[in-house]
Image (cartoon, rainbow, N blue to C red):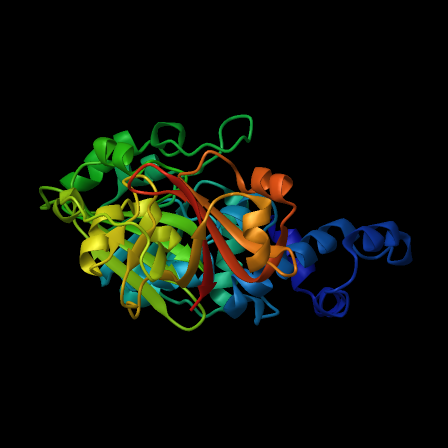
Length: 397
C-alpha cells in the first residue's frame, strides 16, 4: 500500500465514509461508484472489507479509526489479537527482531515486552503501512527496516535477544503451503545463523504441519505451543533456545472468552501406556490443541481417566473430572448405529454427532439415519477397547 493511498485513506472524508458504510454491501458500493467520482471506491471498499474482518480478529486495532488494514494474504495470514498477545506473554528481554514483519500485529505486542524492537520486511508497501499504524498506535520503540531477512542478518551489528519468524506460506503461484521446506524465508539457512548469535527464536508455523516432522527439521526446540482459539487450532509455535538439548515440552493451549485452558506434557509422559475401559458414567473429548499436540496418553494419566480404544482418543470415568481441558459428557446409554434403536433418544430426530475412529463420516451417518443437526443430545460413534462399534448417547455437562 503506497504512501499516497495511505494518505487518501487517512483523510477525514474517507474515514467518515468508511465508518458510515461499514455495514453496507461491498458489491453494491462498487456498483454505485459513479455517485462518488472524487473517491477511489474500490480501494475504500477493500479497506471496509478488511476492517470488518478486523472487528473480531483485531478489536483493539479496529477501535482506532486511524489504523489502515491490508487486504488479501497479509490480512488473512496475520495473527489474531488473542494469539499475538499469547506469544508476547512467552518472552521478554532487551531487544526483539521480527524477521518477517508483515502487517506487524505480532511485533506490536511483542515489542511491549522488550526495550527495543526491529521490524524487518522486504515489501516496501507493508513497511509504509506498518510505519503509519505504529505511529498512530504510539509504538515508539519499533525501528523499521525495508529489506529481506537474509540481507538484514548479513548486515546486523548487534544480535537481538529474540528473533521472531512467521514464514510466508504461499508458493510462487500464490498457493497455500505448510511444509517447512516450502516456506520463505528458508529456515534451514536462517536458524543456524541465529543459533550462532546465542539468541532465542520463536517460529510461527501452520497448524496443518506435522509436529513430529517439524521437530526432525528444527534443532534445539525447547517448547512447542499448540494454540487454539475457541477450540479451533490456529498456530504452532516453536521456541528454540541455543543451549537446549533433548526433547521439546508440549504446551497445548485453548484460548476462550473467559479462560485459557493449558495442558503441558513431555514425550516421556506420552510414552506411558494408559489404562483402557469400556464406557463408564462419563465421557471426555480433549480440546483441539491436545489432539494436535498428540497428548493422547498423557491426558489420560494426568486426569486419571481411561481410554476407550488406542485410536479413538475418547476417555471415560466413574466419577466426573472437574476442569478437564475439553468437553465433558454424561453417558446416558450405549447403543449401535440403528435408526430404530436411536429413535427413543431423539424425539425431535436431532443430535450433535461426533465420529472418533469409526468407519463412517458424520455426513454418512446423517444420511443413513435421517438425524438432523442440533438439539441437546450428543452422539459419539466410536470403536471400543474390544473392537466393537458403538454409539454413545450423551448429554453435555
